[in-house]
Each structure stands twice: as structure tokens, then as C-alpha cells.
Image 1 (tube, rainbow, N blue to C red):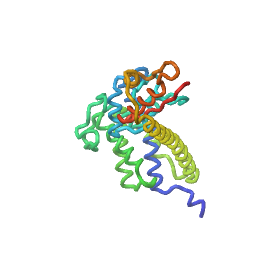
Image 2: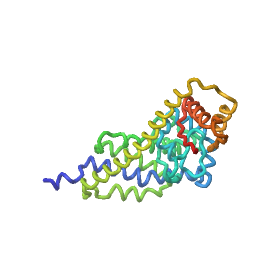
Image 3: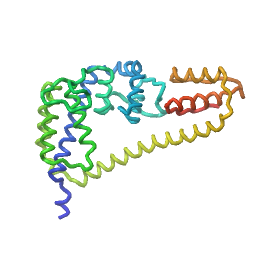
Image 4: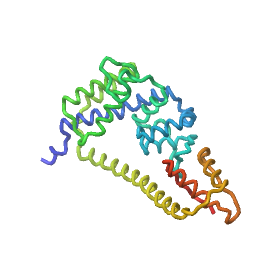
Amino acid sequence: MAGCNSKLSPKEINYLRLDTIIKKVATPTVLKVFNASIPPNDLANVLNSNASIIQESLKKRVINADQLDVLVRVPGVRFTFQSKLPHQKDTSSEDFDITLMICILRSLNMVPAPSKGWNTFPPTEDNTLGANLTKIKILRNTLAHLSKMRLNGKSYKRMSTVLRKALSEISKGETDSIVRDIESFDFGTCDKDKLIKNIQQQIRELKEDLKFHRNIKENASSVLNLWKNELKSFYKTRGTLEVSNKIRTNSVVMIIGNSGSGKTTAMKYASLQLQEEGELMLTSLMK
């Protein structure tokens, strides 16, 4: 009895099969398109040149904080509105998820928009690159937002047919054989308990990562509120205004002066100014 319950159901197999195609086939296929449009050795330059577009995408919630974190860790990227934290690992386009890659391609006009736009599922007859990328993105997001890791036969057939065709058209048939292999693989022999444990471990790791970023934001917010009370009667000087302007246009700013000259106050004032403008800034002060 326990042995039967440990096996995957047909609906769970449908979900796992489609999820595998997206992770193992769709992601590298989109990455190939992305790298062809933005060569890896030019990625940092392209991102820096379009920092304002990236920032606007963040404000409109087209990209999220986790995706921005991946972008700022690309070696050479210098955003005035977000910086890489010390000791974080470098990233590359290989660390970008499907939605982030497609977001960058569309925002920077690297790929023509499909006939119905980027946010509407394209008609079957639209097989342009933009349309196929949109189909992949929407299918991926649909699967990711299912409340349970299950997919009925009708939904699986519809989604897998669209996904298979989109991947084939983008790759010019190169993905056909691997997709067939995944579709014919006997997931029914997989141990459900082991799969669940693996997924639960991934969820725990993700939660820890999110907790880390959330704590940083909470601590920064607490410190900034404390500084706001300290500077209620603050008088702005030309020096403090210059510090604020320098921070907006440079990734690193060093404030130098004699003891008691107002270095700490200038740093606090600049941080509060950026907070009011909607930026999150983490500062460290060397004394």
C-alpha cells in the first residue's frame, strides 16, 4: 500500500514532464537566443548602457528584486540604484531565468514584438521569434503558478503541443529529439518520496535566500528611520549636496575629511535622499 502511494500519479507525471522540458530544453534554448542578441562578453556594457530601462522595469514590477540581484552580480555591471553585496558570487546570463531573459530582450527592443503584444498569448499561426518566446514565457509562468504540481491530460496535451512547436521553430528542429525523449521517458518509475524531498530541499534553500534579502531590507529600513530622526534639524551644505550627487553617478564614493567635519552626517543625508527617491541603499562606514 505504501509502495503504491509513493509512485507518481498520471497528473503529477504530466506536470513533471512539462516542467522538465521547460527547465532542460526551453531555458537553454532561450539562453541561446539571448546570447546571440547580447554576447556574454558585452553583457555588462549593455546592462550599464540601459540601466534606466532596467530601473523602470523594476519600478513597474516587470522584473523583481531577485532578478535584479542576479543582474548586479554580473562582473562589470554598475547600477547607481543597486549594488552587489560583498562576498556574493558572480553571475552570467546562464544564471538568468526565462522571464528575465525575455524581459531584457523585449525591453531593449532586441526582438520585434509579436502581433498581439508581449503580454497576450499569440495566435497559433504567429510563429515569429517574439511570438514563440512569449508562448514559452506564458506557459512557464502558468506552470509555475499552479497551486499543486499536477496537470490533467487535456491541459498537458495543449501546453506540450504549443511548447514543442515553439521550441522547434526557435531551434530549427534541434530540440525535437530531446523533447521526444522526455515525453517518452517513464516517469512512473520515479520515486515520488525522493522527488518531494528534493523539491522541499530546493524550497528551503529558496526561503533562506529570500529571508537573507528580506533581513537586509528590514535592517536598512530600521537604520534609515533612526537617521531620519537624527537629522530633523539638519542644515544642508554644499558639501552634503555634492555627496548626494556623486553617489547618484558613481558606483563607489569615498567621503574624506577631518574628524568632526561631517562625513557621517553627509553619508546619512545622502542615504535618506535616495530612500525618498525610491532607492534602497546599504551603506558601510569606515572610521
